[in-house]
Image (cartoon, rainbow, N blue to C red; front, side):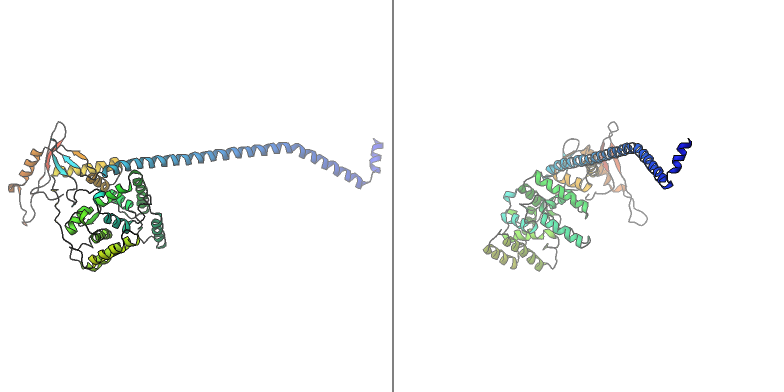
Length: 415
């Protein structure tokens, strides 16, 4: 022991310190090597867990996207099916009827409108069809319900004016959608729905069928619908007998039928001439007529169109109280069942040729209404103006069916 100690004492202190430092470094290195495998293993496990977690998140997101796409597809499919069912029925363009309990017709819905028998497009003058297409939708035969060029311009105008301009850009097919649904609200949602329905109409029907329906139900004057009725109202002739100038006039008034009405006493003669010439110029520009046809029609317009107001009768639309209530109920039920507005439901009943079966006992209804006309029930108030009123309902207590009803005294007015 003494000898070893003596040897260590003989070693310089600086060398001894270097030796000790080296031994410490080797000791630390060995400890580090022992801990590294464990840390590496832990890091790998952590990365593996994170990757697994990310894969789960991606799967969840993918599943949610698929659910949204499937749900959206189902909704669009249901929407397309319902629209096809409704529009196909409405393209029949026939008034719906109400029958009493004995099967007798007691009401024709839409009789209060001035409209004549629909006309096949083959029986309409080519100039009339060309006039409407030229001024309303010059690319009608090439688009699929939406005119991308006009729609893009309308959207750009809407954006640049910060939402203060009308959308515009409506194709004939879109106008038909609006006429069928009765939806005239000014909203982006409505416009998108209109585009979708217009596209579907182009899938369901031919261009000729769309044009025929459009021209037969379009509003052309005061309670006047369809070009046949318009021809009778403004010129007292059938639509097939209209001249080129008269066709241009009828197509031109589409943007404001009541204003261009020559029988209302407006100071609009100059405006009628200018608007009709605008249509003729557009037809010439698009090659629908030649120069000689244009000049002849222009001369007729400038010399004054031969307006001749025709008498168009409307049917008896003063329905019984029972029928009024039934129509209201049918509209509400149809709107709820088909998930459409009541205005749309009313239009459907005006055009679909449906049959509504009523529980009305017409002989009993007549007696109830006759009783309500008797003066013995009329009692005047102290001021001599207000009078008494009364209502009556007769029903079958076994079935709950309403057989007859009235909602007031004296003769019933138009619904």
